[in-house]
Image 1 (cartoon, helix red, strand yellow):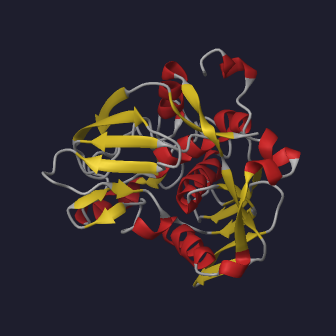
Image 2: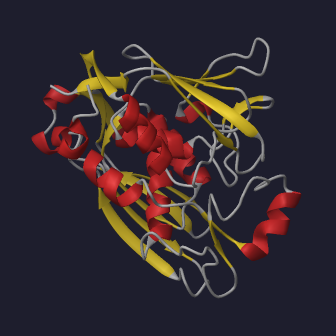
Length: 306
């Protein structure tokens, strides 16, 4: 049996929002089974709690936002990706500002944080969303598709004119261990030439070499370079996992994306949910062994988890 998980105890982290530039404190609380991931803006009097689901997503330009208008939480994708990556289903997230702290631009800080406090297994089986038939969305030459598979697989392609990135393609078979080792440390990235334009749009006010890979016209300008030769496509997969986790279940399906982004990921989730014949929700106990084994936590972390 594969059971739902939450965090072992409350933990607090403070950092800067990459787009808002505002210092924010995020407090994570354990939650009971079937609670899901929920956000509460503590800086807004009487703000309604926001459940992180595909249908509560608002803006998707350069980040994924839960909620709309003033009561919204921006840039949730890296935190949600780590929750999915560690098989955590239930957390109450209090935040005293508009945006999840960017930390180092990857999910590594959140992995470290959750490793330190531990993970608790709850007495309720996980449920999987099992894809039964292909669903595809397209916007111009960009597209994303989900189709049947015995476990979560993400096959992603990005295309940039930049000489360091060019075309990168990676197929990733999900497991908690491979997520931690291969995906969680991949940082967000951007072009130096786009900074002024993005700032005029009210974005990247908190961006820096400490929380993003920055490229000029020819090279990476971060002094420490890249963590992986293909860090760019690995970060795309990190984003995809965070966005697809908003379906609200562990997933048995193959996701293929071409030049995708947060908007396409959300359109794919919504179209899938609007196509009842394309999926079913089943208990983990009825799935093939490989889907269950993907959520085993690595032995190297076992002493930290409860």
